[in-house]
Length: 274
Image (cartoon, rainbow, N blue to C red; front, side, top):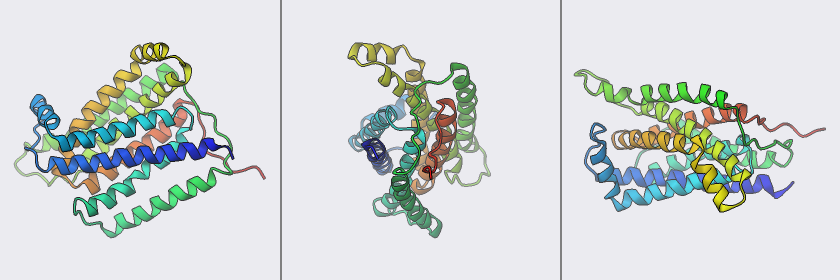
């Protein structure tokens, strides 16, 4: 087997580790900060940017996203995304060790299942049929998929905020936050996948800069990540990371795997020819 799949799995693991470790660092930093009020976004941003611990976590998240862009230039979604999703296991472990959030039996089984899935993915890559890496998608199809996904994600993710104004409300568990932000992060991942095509098409710094700045993908990534990040900080501060992060990760990963392979004309790995 060529080094490509192994390199893709390794870089995807690095991306997942950096990104999810950053989330846990952010969660710990948020515990020492004033309560987040998303009606006062400038104040929220100022509080976040004034926290060195939060900035350290945010830097790790950006490192993970950068690794994700790079790996998607040479590895298909069907290989990269399951590895990125395995970061949930790391979050559950760190939530127990660092944040003192106790793992339930179901969460423990999830850790074991995800660890095994990563190993099986690495092994199966030796015999999987070669999958071409797609870099381009139909603009009409992208809009048709992304636009309603963003609307649904916003509606679901903000539902706990609307419920907060009610006198008799159920405790916020983080599931709505997780589903909504997962959809927003999934859309951002689709846009990152689109940006990976720009990296593949341009081989000079000037061409790359022009291609990125003139692409709508950059602004979709910035918008979705910006909104999702603010909602996610509110979720992390008020809910258990061991619930919010896995739900968001699983929803975003599943969405990206299904929509990404379809939009960019990729295929799931096939069984080796007999």
